[in-house]
Length: 323
Image 1 (cartoon, rainbow, N blue to C red):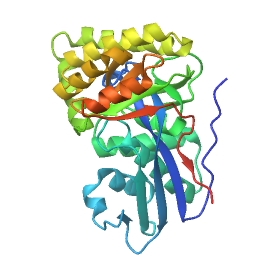
Image 2 (cartoon, helix red, strand yellow):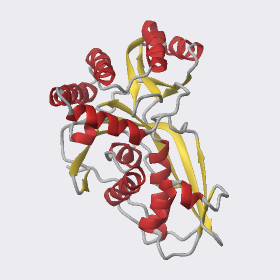
Image 3 (cartoon, one colour):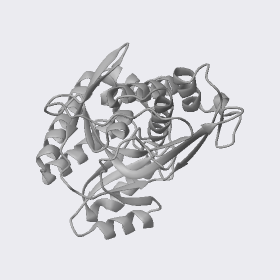
Image 4 (cartoon, rainbow, N blue to C red):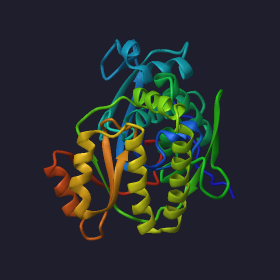
């Protein structure tokens, strides 16, 4: 049976919504080319407040439509011809860290604008959020936006059971499914090095189009497919092993970074498996701690210069904040 996620109801401005960040476990980059991806929503939230205004502004910046492509795309796609809005965003998700800061902002804003124009079902909200992000970035997959809209563990182009929705673009279709949460604690750590998702996606696409690229893509597909199944079954040793293999592939396509490699080395004594998460070339790492060594892992990553977070997946996707 297809999971029924609650719709976003119709409300009048002023409105507020919140959306979680996300963390990719398997399959980043390859998902753009139709391979599977597994991600989960993390309990680091972004809140978006929208009120009527005299001019459309983001965080008091009247020029935001010019230099913030996500804000511009959302207003152009879903608010064109309507009165100006004042938008304020507060986020616990580090920016340009590979943890879904743009997806959380996009989904939260899309939820508010959709509510103020009659309400929306979850599948349409996921499609709209993806359209904003792809318009802003010019490339990408719906993995980030679908995860922050749905909450929990989400598989794109993989997993079992009926899709909770399908996301369409002129060049691709992606099926999105729910994956069972095994109940583990994870540690993610921001390296402090910002990265550009669009630049990294284009670089990996060029590598996969070169000699040997089809074999690399097939190995990404195998690792993600087996990883989704292992998480769904709660097979911790298999997940740890596949995290390490996924990192090897990400090194091979050129999106690791000396700073990330230093963090992964620092994590080894207290982690069963670890890899970069997100676009790479900076950003963050994700680690599955050795049970009982969560605090040691956080300390190791902090001493290595990262900003670590102990996180649990949250089932709370993008939603209005009532009251």
